[in-house]
Image 1 (cartoon, rainbow, N blue to C red):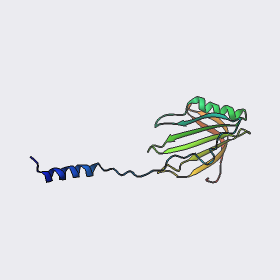
Image 2 (image 1 turned 45 degrees about the vertical axis):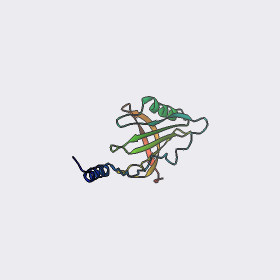
Image 3 (image 1 turned 90 degrees about the vertical axis):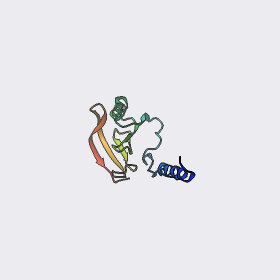
Image 4 (image 1 turned 60 degrees about the vertical axis):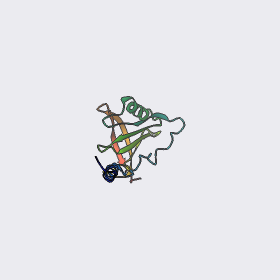
Amino acid sequence: MWNRGARTLAVALLLTGCVVQSTPTAAPTAPPSAQPAEPGSHDCGTLLLRQGQTVPTDALRCVVEAADNRQQARLVVTQPTTEGDPITTTYAVLGDGRVEVTTDARADRFGSGRVERQTCTGPSIEDGSRLSFATCVSGAPV
């Protein structure tokens, strides 16, 4: 039989091992350019993907067709890195068919930690699961 002091010590040690202190991490945020879609702009979707998931072909096709038709559209995709950190990429199709690609990696603990913007032309669907572009010009980090 345990005496009262031994039981109290055992409970205290057990509870000490159960204390969890979490380190706050940066929450995913919308990139600065991810403003509400303009009136008349087509919404291609806002997707929050899990590890291993890919962007549906319909959403990719929406961006390609909008660029081909020179219609404004927007697709927002948040995907986890290998470590699980969210990276948000916004594809904003402009009225002239160019696509502004903004990648927000501020919550990526092992990546650049920056928001970067490119202006691209000639979008196409590659491997049925991602967009590729004929040309892209990088701007200064946002």
